[in-house]
Image (cartoon, rainbow, N blue to C red):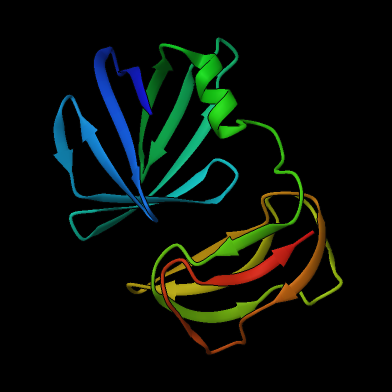
Length: 166
């Protein structure tokens, strides 16, 4: 998928090419060594050249996006917002049974829920520690915790399913 965005007043071309489980990224035609995982609605864990970042994306009233990385805030405008919302479901809850996956390798430090608990979209499910930082993996939808596939203290790999919400 290729999208044109305006980021802080500069036009950028971003392309995401899915190759199996991996995604190859290019920005303005230059390849970028990056992995990005949506850990909860509007919150992304991004790994670029071995450095970890958390990005928060929130819609603005004028159809722009506010992107916050660390303490820096950026304004982004998608050239074709229909494609963005169609592909990302911005602002909408996920439908059907959802698998929550570990965004990177780490250790489960806290289980915030148990099977059978009702959860709201964006509610924390587990806390994992990775690269000396704690990350909360949140529910992408309102529903019920169908299964927890991890235990406190367990080590997990990137992409490993930690819970199922139905």
